[in-house]
Image (cartoon, rainbow over all chains, first blue to last red; front, side):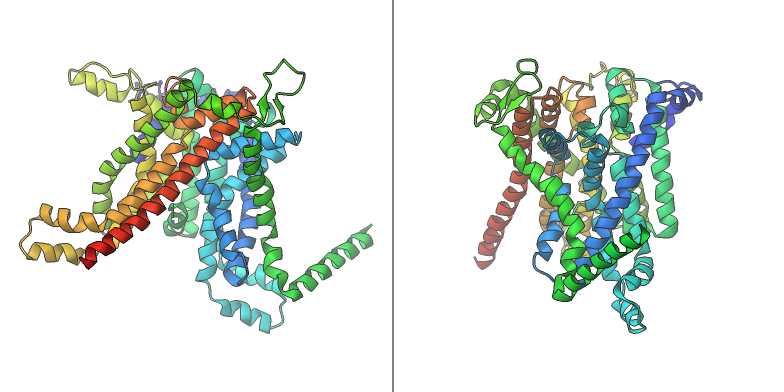
Length: 246
Length: 309
């Protein structure tokens, strides 16, 4: 059932608002591409999604590495802690961050939004990357170090390529979580940094403009193509491991 | 100058290596994650508590400030007013439970067939569900907006069958439908995961002993899948409680949930009250988790007693 409803919105953009479409027309796509607000929204969303994916990948991979390879006090606590934003209502997080930065009188909305989206993306990234560390054999790393490489070199040249599937899956999940995020972003954007979801929501509350449908199709296509990328490099199973709730 | 930067980098690296030698390596590696989460997740969450006790100053009364750091419980008192409890808390609870139950009813059969089917069809379904979730809440909610409208396809079908068109948008029913669809994917995965763990030979055994298919299901599979059902319920309730986009669009301002309240109050700069609304929401989600844990423990005790007798 879920996919059917999504497919429903995909058919819409080529026609007028009601579904099933009354006819085929590309005029809503033209409107979509011409709408400056939406285009800015896309640029903004991509900007923040890419950056927060990069950050959460870095942070998440480091943390996964530490948890997978070392045994230290507070290890389980950290594990739960990194995953906790998933259980925490996004609304509450958005509100908390907004209040926090207002109290601190910190006004750089770009950094604020980046922080918010990174926190949202991090659990998804972490949840997929951590298992992939367990999946690779340590003997590769040991072999490299025996041959004289130091730890950083080993990590960069041996470990990272080995966990590439996990990295790709994590990147896609993180990007999706960031790009499509509404609940947290809506609190943290300002006029200049409006992301696409926030803008679309605003439009939706006003009218049933099929331009929104065109934008929706764009989002669908983007996400599906990302999925195809993952399938080619990895396999859907890795992704599913990350999507599971527990 | 280049030389100066290299020296600082070298000193930093030596410092890290010394720390690493002392066994601090894991802590260093985890530092970014920890710092990010502590300062921008934990601390803000905690400051919500203190903010909820602050006094709200309506904008315009005092220049530039709309909250005052004193201690007052007026925000909590205000929340207990009927407007809020009946207007936000109650619909949230209703929708949470209704969507979860409806979702369970719809997803169990599907989960069962998926669990018992071939790995290939499972993969297909997995892909479909991932696509459905990956497109994000806006697309999802928008497609419901179209489908549930007065002239939407569902109403077309209903009027074709001879009934009056139903108003979905703005009603709790609409929000429940939207929420249920969202929950379906999660519920199905949770349920099919646990059903897969039930050995089908138990059912076969029951049937070979003469039980009908339905009987075998009711007496064997269903009870065995109870733990899976309860974790699915947990997931459904927790996710359902925090919906924002769905009630915002499908509820059209008439039906709203707790998350909408948080948003509205923050929009109107009433941060203290928004904090209260937030805390209520968090309490609900935490309450579900702990309540479920508690129930689990009591049920384990109950089951053990049953086995003994």
